[in-house]
Image 1 (cartoon, rainbow, N blue to C red):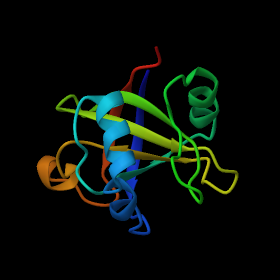
Image 2 (image 1 turned 135 degrees about the vertical axis):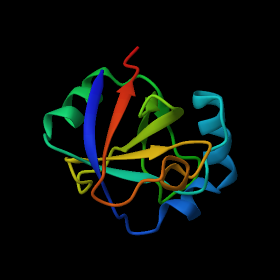
Image 3 (image 1 turned 30 degrees about the vertical axis):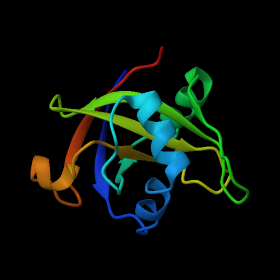
Length: 126
């Protein structure tokens, strides 16, 4: 599935989450890379993309500690250049028009991107 989205700033919480041992280990097992400690937040034009991902998603990040939520994990590629993962938290308050992208590199620096730029994500659904 190919989608486009616009880069937006996040709240800066992903670094703490991505450096937790069990999170890092599970993401490596599912994505075959160690993620850079931070996510790229992508604003989508449609809430229906998240709905479709929730219907098709099979890989889950299941919390090993209280206080964390389940999330769906998808493999992908960003702008045709870097393997990436899409992390979709399964909580009601999560913005239905947003996705969080992880990669083995700092995506903004590596692709020379800034907030407002449009990126293409190729997402594996199987």
